[in-house]
Length: 449
Image (cartoon, rainbow, N blue to C red; front, side, top):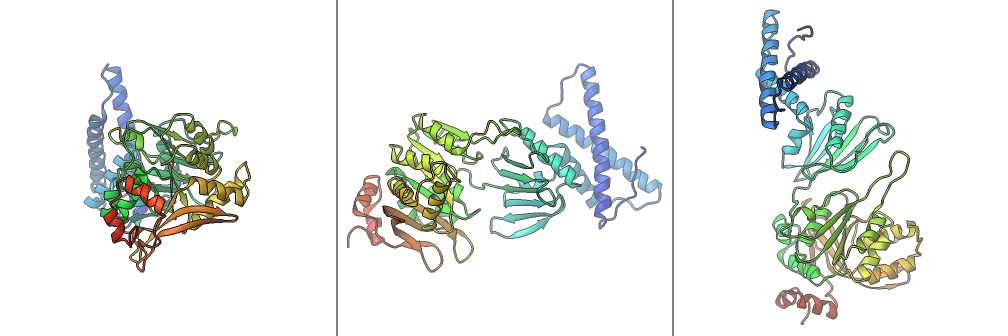
């Protein structure tokens, strides 16, 4: 055993990481040699369970050897807690996502932000940030971990190097990963978790996103095939609410979903949505060729006989084909958009339309939006810092540079949505026909005096 270290103290994290690296190298080398011996003997490769057992045995042997060496040299014996951390670090490194695996396994964590291998922050479901231990021994090791994740992703190969310094993909558990290098001081990694992949209106009520009466109203919007755009800021829960809307779509309908990166996962629920085509945009290759954006996918999707088109998030030029889809027989379509207020959704739609190849004027955009979008549902934060629906607008018409709308739910004193202007009579009739309880609407001050 030519490479040895003195026993690290509990506070000597650098020595501990160095020892973990040495043990990992030795276990990996012995594991490779053992696999070679099995192959020469004509034995099959070990499955995942057997491989973990073998790694555990080799790890115990290597830690035992280090422990005996420290004692023989008169050094301090390894603290059991240090041994446990080293063992965990080695197992993490050999089985996929490194130390990220422990964070990904923690269901209470919502966001994981890595600003360099040893600057790790996580945000829990209550919105509180806390510092976590390093996820790699160096930034170079972190890059290799990210590349390993990219190699495991389904679909085409995804590069991550100085020539392609960003990576955007979905992890096997549905989490969304985005990483950058070269354009930042250190390698940066962000993982956004979706804690409620099978959301429903009932789940939104349980989580406090809306009350039961508002949930009844939103269900009726879906069943009445109203086109809805869900707005809100970053990380406010737009995708979860979109899933809840989609949960109310009858299972016999054919859906086409279009996303920048797969997140919705409606095709993974054949009981609720047995007839789904899920499409994902593709970025150009290193020569700048082969890219397919969401706008093109919307056009393709319209040729696939959908009952509804769902765009995970409007980000740019897809706004025009999306509105065309909504106004040309695909009523009941859904999408999300970043916007700070419900009225701001209209400004954002106009901005994207102005930047599209069609270069629509504001007046033309407003006419298009007014003929396509029936309702805007906006998410924000209540006074206690919880995610809530705070506004719902019914789109009425376009008047030159303005979209005319009624705010049927507005933010109350605590930031949560409360009933405001009644919906139009013809809209109320549609919603009642779709199953909205008239008594509930009367209770909210709508419909009858």
